[in-house]
Image (cartoon, rainbow, N blue to C red; front, side, top):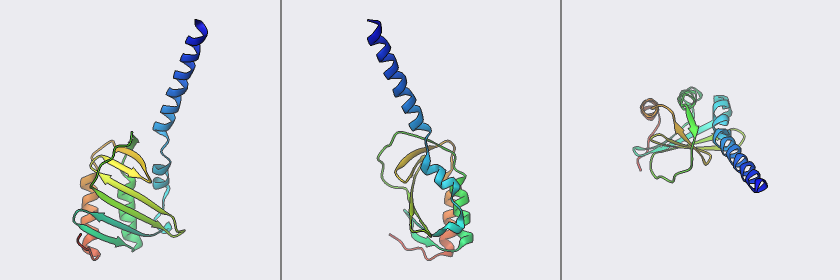
Amino acid sequence: MKKPLRNTLIIALLALALGIAWYFAGSSMRELKELKAPDIKEIFIAHPAGYYTITRQEDIQILLDALKSIDNIRKVPEMKDGGTVIDIKLKDGETMNISLRSEDIVINRQHYKATQAYYNKISEVFQLLSKEYDMKTN
C-alpha cells in the first residue's frame, strides 16, 4: 500500500516540476530581450489599419526598445485571431514572429501574457513609424 502511494507522489512531484519548468522557460522571450538592432535587416508590421516594413536602424531600435519593455509570463496557448503581426527578419536569414493581441503575446509560437498594459505605448510607436513609411491598407 505504501509503495503505490510513494510512486504516485513521485509522479505528481515530477509533473509539478515539469510544469514549473515549462512555465518559466521562455527561450523566445529571452531571444527577443537579447536581440540587438544591428542584427535586424527589417521589420514587417501588419495591424488592422494597414502594413509597412521598417528598414532604418534608428526606427528598428525604437520598436525593439518598445517590444523589450513588455514584461510578461508564460501561459497556456489560446487560439485567437486579430491583433498585430510583427515579423523581424534578421541579417542571418532567420525570422522572429511576434503576434500582439491585447494582453496575449506570441513569440515564435510560445505564448505569453503581459503583466502590465503595454498596447498604448506600442500603438504610439506604430503611429509614429507609419507616418515615416508608406503604409499600405488591407
